[in-house]
Amino acid sequence: MNQPLRTLYPEIEPYASGHLDVGDGHLVYWERVGTPGGKPAVFLHGGPGGGCSAQHRRLFDPNCYDVLLFDQRGCGRSKPHANLDANTTWHLVADIERLRQMTGVESWLVFGGSWGSTLALAYAQTHPDRVSALILRGIYMLTQAEMDWYYQFGVSEMFPDKWERFLAPIPADERHNMVSAYNRRLTGSDRAEQLAAAHAWSLWEGETITLLPEPDLSEAFANPEFALAFARIENHFFFNKGWLEEGQLLRDAHRLSGIPGVIIHGRYDMPCPARFAWALHKAWPMAEFHLIEGAGHAYSEPGILDRLIRATDQFAPEI
Image (cartoon, rainbow, N blue to C red; front, top):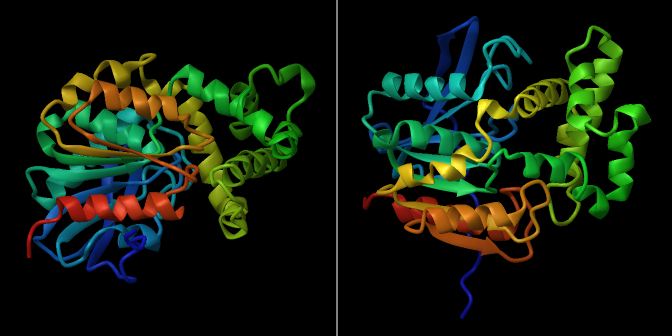
């Protein structure tokens, strides 16, 4: 008999929140939800530049967990908005450690999806002794092959109508390197051009991350304030290849040895091809692997959400 699909826990407000001065002029917004003193966990949002939402708080049983969520540098409620200075993978890894030290816990469960899975892997490989478990969704290794697939040729074949809109702001003679072409516009001095590029970049992602269209999700990606931070920060990271060596996160997967985990990936994930999740599974065999049929990339898709809730429940302490 099939079990009903699990869904989000009830709405919950933070019991504490604030801004942490992480240096370099950045103030990082953080909030904590659940039960103070419960199982410590940290939630790493996607993008880069996506920020946290009230729904992300609901991925954990509030009676069991004490969860810290934060908006990474430059996005969401962190300040300054859309800022790229001192904003790299390794700055964010250091921020996670600062936040852990702020909470006073020795180690915590790390939950990351999409770019959050990239950041979670970078953090866990740098500080394996600080990670009690990993829950990773929509695996992204930030390799050249993955970026080419999404921003050059591959997903373009599945979404020719949406790809045409993504191409539109870029002259034909620059389309051989879309990430670089967008970088020039997103970091340029022409404000109107910057906003138009941000809208097109953000909407391309918003319209291709789910198996079936979700208009509300796409509209959120089109919001000008969200799009500016999302597009500028995401493109900045991808233009600089995440400040990672090519293939680094897979190469160093051996550093996850001894860390229990769960890998969850949609079969039809467009931004993040499933073969990279499969490669991580082979390199980190002690982690459970779930390839979700009938699902794309978004955590909110029913099959993915069901498995994510089951994963957080799996690591929850007995009450």
